[in-house]
Length: 480
Figure 1 (tube, rainbow, N blue to C red):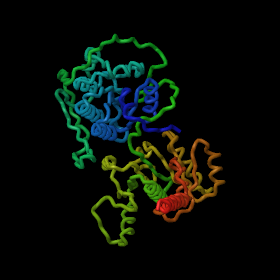
Figure 2 (tube, rainbow, N blue to C red):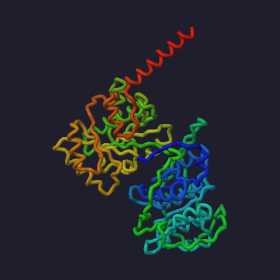
Figure 3 (cartoon, one colour):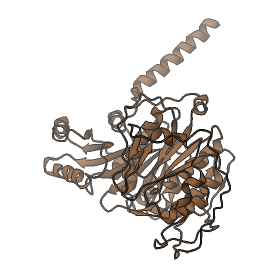
Figure 4 (cartoon, rainbow, N blue to C red):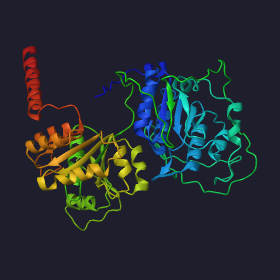
């Protein structure tokens, strides 16, 4: 397991600080490994434009260090499986405008004569890594890093001004679409809330010549361009959407800053296995450990509304608020997908998603993006086939972060499951009828499930506190 340790802010300024934004978490992590091996500090990896923009503005608020470069994939902005390239252009323009000191480097999955490239050039974004016609490209990792200080020059990218007018695209000469960000300023106690960006309207392509309107002149190269050779530093792509990275030996890393929020997604192999029960227990367990926790109902049910009514002791209570709080945990009722991102600008550190059944859920992508992925399952022999079916249904997804929480079975069943499916983690969930009260046994199980440091037994902690009080009293008596 990777060790994460906070170090001084000086370390953040001694290296190049970069951010990676790519929809494929596995690719981004591989790219991060290459960059770290070359002495670059990777501040964060983001798979959606929303998360990227939120963190960029948080970094800007903190003003503790400079983001030297932002690596962007042209496939970053998506709605389900559809790429929103015009939205990507708007997001890139917004970053260009508000973070002018950061070098933008775009890894484009589009054909060379796509209008997207012409629009990016018109914005003064010259660091375009574009695939060739046969969809194969080579990028030298060291040269990629060199673009941070010595960006491409206009003569290298002006060819992208001649784009294919048969590809549907809006008019973008002197074009600017506003991108609005919803960010809360916690330090000042103020906030500004504006509408999130929407999909750009498609227009018929224009045949007018593209005018370069760069506000920032690219830095002139002070070193000669180095011709790329086929070395192990190359990135190569052989598929339309995927860049293939070379093998790289991982270094033992000391994380310089733990950035972002912990997202724990809870789903079930089928309905009725106790997903909500488990999610509530996890949220209360984390709250008891001192974390600021938000529990989001992402399954289209009204269970949280009933929980709120039971808590207030009245079934007739009607509240207009979408949230309520119990034992320090903030509950978000019946969350709509379009409101999902807005909850991550709060001060909470841990977010638990009660997704319910994963199949056909609009939050399925969020489950696969979560830092901790928990699947509640029944361990009964006649229901173990549901676990096998669940694994097969999602075989195209990364399952390395999956943890199966198996209800009410003996430890021998867990051993059998591990033997039958050695590539997956199985943890036994015992009997805990009240998820709002986490006993010691359940606490130990959840510690293992969430892979958190173990806490000492409550009675041991109380004993140590009592001994401390007694010693203090004895010292006071002796001093008299």
